[in-house]
Length: 223
Image 1: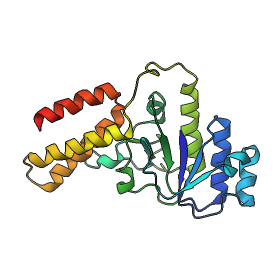
Image 2: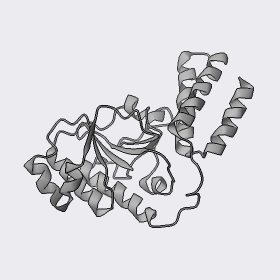
Image 3: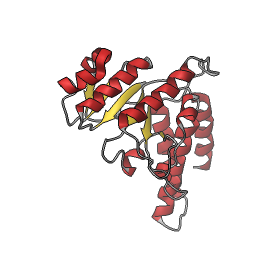
C-alpha cells in the first residue's frame, strides 16, 4: 500500500509520517503535488531513522493508475452527503486488497474535497470527539497505519482470492452509466445520486473478480 500525502505544505509533517510508516512497516511514500521540500532539514529531523523513506519518496501529479484509492476525512456526512459516508480504520484493516492501492492523507488545512473523495473507492475516518474532530495529519496517519499493521499480522481469509482490478471496476462503472441513461429519473440529480451510490457500493464491498463479473452479467441483462 502506498501512503499518499496530498499537497502537504509543512516538511515536518511529511517527516513525521515517514517515521510512522517505518514504525509499522510501510515503505512507499508518495507525494501528490507537494508544496514544500520533503528533503529539508525539518523533514529529515522529524523522520529520525526513517530518512530512507523520504529519500525514496515518489512525486506524482495524479493518482489515476491506482486500482484502489482510499480517501480520508474528519468531516462526517449525512445520508444526503454520500461523499462523506466513511468506514472506520478497524473496518478498513479487515479488508483484503490486490493490485496497486493508495491511502490518501488529505491536505493539512482543509483535507480532501468532496469531488476528490468522489474519486475514491473507500472513505475512512477516525472516530473522535464531536467537539474537536480534526486531528494533526501525522497523528491521524499513525492511527491508520497502526490499525492496518495490527491486522496485517493476522492471517486473512480470502488472501488467495482474485479481487477486482481498476480496469474491472471501470468497465462495470461504464455499464452502470449506460444502464442509468436508459432509465427514467425525475431529475438529473437523482440519476447522479444513483451513479454515486453504485460507485460507493462497489468500492466498499471490495468485490472479487468473480462477484464483479456476476454483477456485470446481471446489468447487461437489464440493459
